[in-house]
Amino acid sequence: MKLKTFRGGVHPLYAKELTSHKSIREMKAPSILVVPLQQHIGAPTKAVVKPGDEVLMGQVIGETDQPVSAKVHSPVSGKVIAIEPRPHISGRSVLSVVIENDEQDRWVKLDTHFDPIQLSREEILAKIFEAGIVGMGGAAFPTSVKLKPPGQAKIDFLIINGSECEPYLTADHRMMIESPDDVILGAKLLAKAVGASKIIIGVEDNKLDAIKVLEEKKGSDAISIVALDTKYPQGGEKQLIKALTGREVPSHGLPFQVGVIVHNIGTAIATVEATRDGRPLIGRVVTVTGSGVSEPDNLYVRIGTPIKDVIEACGGFNGEPGKVIIGGPMMGLAQFDLDAPIMKATGGVLVFTQDETVQYDPMPCIKCSRCVDVCPAYLLPLRLEKYGMYDLWDEAADYGAMDCIECGCCTYICPSKRHLLHWIRLAKNEIVSAQRRQNS
Ligand code: SF4
Ligand code: SF4
Image 1 (tube, rainbow, N blue to C red):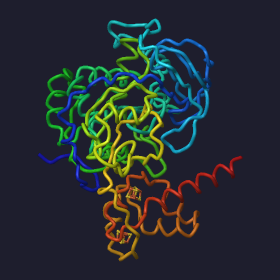
Image 2 (image 1 turned 90 degrees about the vertical axis):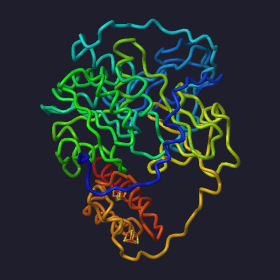
Image 3 (image 1 turned 120 degrees about the vertical axis):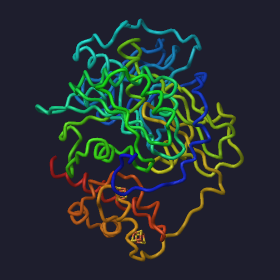
Image 4 (image 1 turned 60 degrees about the vertical axis):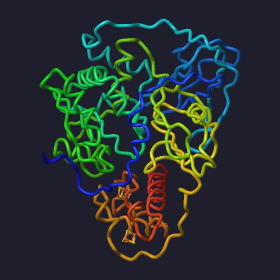
């Protein structure tokens, strides 16, 4: 059978066998949690608690009245001991609510619903908003906003992204195997919320056990489980849409413009928890892995748990760590402060040993064009790199820098070890800043 795929991409070492067989284990919540008031794309939330307040598990601690934002809830019951800037995985300090855990896990009153699929579209959207759900695949875009595309956009396909194409990560894989009914129900709820008649769950063919169990559980012809070629970045929205529907999202465009909305496995499950159980998003599954961790594992972790505690829950470091990355090795963010907490969109903590973190100095470009061949966005990375290096922002924009999905394939494949993505990111930031200045 010919597998669905896209043009370009690379085949890095997947290294998923470290954790793909490990069942999800709930990590005990730490004694102190640090919950950032901004964990999503959009406006930050405003604290609605103050130091000294007692909070219940699931209580709103960050409220919003902004159109693009997501509420923040307490992941434990306990006492607010500070609201102050704290380290964040972005490298900045972000205003955060610091909570002392009373270890009682006393919930707020939950509004449960026996059969959530009976809820109306508006009720599903309202519960997703109340639960503070965001895209849990890394983008952290508020889900209730994504489900209301602008204008009269007609959505016919809902895609659930089960590709988990980043090497090392296995959180989505385990959720598909361990909670297939919730993945299917979550997909149906999301489809109802956006008015989509067809659901496709795309899964890379290195997770055949997940494909099998979802196929057994789907129970409706409106849902297709489709095997995708194992290739990075298969989970990129535009790449996934092209592979599964043949539709091409236009340059500078968004999926709704071609009648498609994409959501992640974790988002589907969080939608079930919000609508059926009344539970807000206060925890998530995180893969803690790499040869620098003593006991790699898949953990259910409360939002706000410091990275150092998560590593400790997996036996601590294995030898001297060289690099700690939040996310996968291709698109993840290297960390310098392990007090930064796990957030709603954090799917992985990856630790490399010192031996594995070799730094290369870039060498001259040999015009081999490999970066062009692998670019899934049809760009010329070597040219964009030059524009980034020499402050040629208009030229970078003309050559499509804003279509770069920052997958890192160009940097990965370059035999001269050039820092292509670094310069392209810089160009993108400068283009966005210039547009903001123009509009202000
Ligand atoms: S230019 Fe951007 S989209 Fe293309 S390979 Fe490089 S990082 Fe990926
Ligand atoms: S892959 Fe590296 S060496 Fe080859 S053309 Fe691109 S930038 Fe130059």
